[in-house]
Amino acid sequence: MGKRRWLFAAVLAFAAAREGRSQPLNPAQGMNPWEKLKLGEYVQSVKFGGDMRLREDYYARRSPGKDDRGRQRFRLRLGADVTLPHYVRLGLRFASGTGEQVSTNQSMDNLSSQKGLWIDQAYLRWAPFLSDDGTVHLTGGRGPNPLWRTYSSDIVWDDDLNPEGLSEGVEWLLPGAGLTVFANALQMVVDEDANTPRNQWLFSQQAGAEVAVRPLNTRLRLSAAYHKWSDVNRGTLSQAATQEGNRRSGSVLSNRFGVAELTGELSTWIGAMPLSLQGTLIRNYSALKNVTPRARDGYQCGFILGRAKAWRSWEAAWFKKYSQSDSTVADVADSDFGDGGTNRQGHIFWVAYNPQQWLQVKAKYFTTKVIDNSLASAQNDMNRFQADISVKF
Image (cartoon, rainbow, N blue to C red; front, side, top):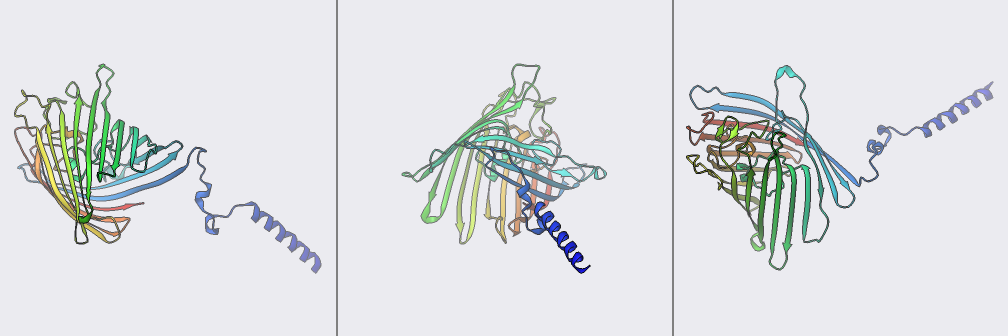
């Protein structure tokens, strides 16, 4: 009887061992769960990432009869970067929001109804390797803004805008001159209308250079750009969000837009602290003479002291902005300055701190005034406060 029990136990042990060898280990037993992820045979690498931000957004309107406003908002972005053969890259990102071209913020409202994700980026980029001294690229789809920008550039471009169309770029080091030169171009499809053969486009060209003063650990970068908006006053742009400032006939822009932009950044150090001095000047050289007053100029300048990026790092900043009504197309300009758009002037302050590399807290304050109340679609002088908590992963 004892021998039979021993034999039965041995058979069970052998069967259990065979069963254990035939099934993969679960993650708790040491297996990497990503080993089950199957990729296409042409995929060389995939990188996933994203970020999440919580925001308290408060408006204090100073104009008579205008109510204050407070919103609780969030932003979620999830993306992937896929490397393919022959120097081809695919970029994909989904984001929260309401479909606006200049914002991925989503307000907490509607009795906690479910919120949607949108295609924020979807593009192909070809960047062949030609030399260690520089890079070239060709991009098509809905991708990140290809133009070199500083914070002061948001007088023209909201940071959340992802142009749809084609773009090209080159950046090259000239070792003998100690100079880096670059050029970028953008052909953005503004609106396609089946009822007319003349679609609306934006054509942007930018050229610039950067020089490094190594003994002073200082870098100066300058660029000149021209943004030509084609046929934008022939019909609406069909945009999801219309921002204040530009003069319109109904929903159609009254003016023409050919915006020249000069941008510069001086990066240096004060002791162990990085310092960035920035400035942008713009003028709409295509503004019509019979649309008066012309109101075609704008500028933004300021500084950022420190850099909130690494562990226990911080930054503080101040900027002054002045943007006349038709200095640029309001519907792609910064959406946070006042109510967004143009025909505003004022100051911007912020401080930010990273207790961890992946975690940031930030407080930002805007004080803004309407430049010309006779041109304002909503006469709102206001102060605006934003408090953010952001994580990236």
